Length: 596
Image (tube, rainbow, N blue to C red; front, side):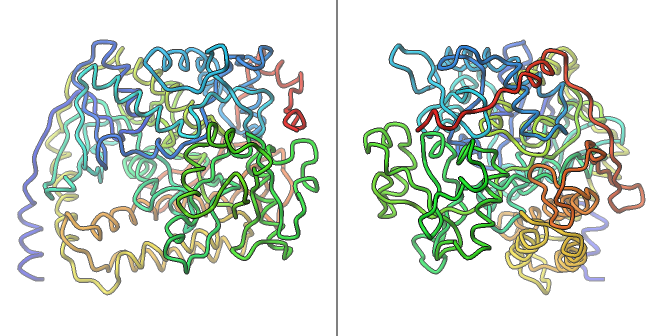
């Protein structure tokens, strides 16, 4: 044993402590809206943590819109039809109570954002405008051009700042502190200074995003949506749910990755708003191929349907040079495109492509994890005081997310969770000495030992190998053999992850090493769940089980075994309320040809 190893084991590194009643981990829309609700209900001992600079959250990448049955364009729409569309798109493995909770309150949440100054696009008479989005029966997607997420987060940050809500940036949480029954705080490090930190917190809210970046081709940045939230909760003893359901957005940018100018854009989202405003998909032969797959809803069918259609066109040899298809909105007036899709227009203009006159190449890309942490109706896990919301939680979206529902979920559950916590909050936490000795100090010693370690494998190479593995073995098309091979390959990656070259705490390699740990948990859950679910449902497609099996209208739950290893069990889905069932029975459906 080296002198350094002896020092680490006998003398844990120093760390700073902060006492707070409510710790919110994640500074996107879900975390911000929770903190706002707490502040407005008189809870002033709140701290919001972000991994990045203030305002730099993945929320800003959500461009197309946010759902709510305002009825601006289609007065016959209402929240029960919104809920019905959500359940239908989720292939009826959503939690109906969570769906109701989101759909019923969204008109009020949209108007609330309007009162707070959100920069919505407007109708001629000044109302909040609404557009078509895939698989929705009516125009219920409110928007701010094609920068809705950015405008939403700006609005929430302005509101939070007006309420003087404390915020700390560039802090990464690496472990939750629990005694198995309730939460006591969280451990992490300051990414700038390298200082280790312990937050003593009576309540912790995980609003840390999802896990789509475990895939090599995805719409996130590589350093976010790595599964932080679900993995932290799982490690603490909470259950995960629905992790096998990963949405592959039909239209990520398909680029020549040998071209240095285009390569950074590979997989980046071309918002669904392009299709919502009339964009059409063509294969390399010039065929508008969605007529083969969905003549009724065309490009605005469900995301899983459109993504698989594109994959099938490419597999049949009708794809573009960069492995995609063409998305074309050039039949619209240039002024219309620049008004309704300004960010998309500017992006492609900067790359030398005029969206108003030329098609762009697109292909499916990992976009959203429908699964996450299993929570109750208020967002609380089975560990008292630990909540999970936004893309970190499971239950709202089922097997496939309705476009425009991700932003809706963040503000709806931010409100509900904030309200619940405000009714119960009872002051700062105090980490028991037993947890200091058995959880905090051993974990900090592990982090200290990992810093400046000289292993056999490069952290970035291991990171990319894991992403490639997940894309190959748990992508759009899955089968038993590929999933089994993926689990075997995951064991190899896990071994390499334990022997990596890692720099100091402030280095990118150290952050990547932490991310890899989170990603291993998320990837294992996706592979195990996809192997267990012997059917095709929504975004989960098994080529060896291509049909939907009614006996699989269940949710797969994942839990960490006491002796190590991941265990699973399935639970049945509850029935929707009478009001929502009535809306389902009415059979509402988008008529795409209203756009023609």
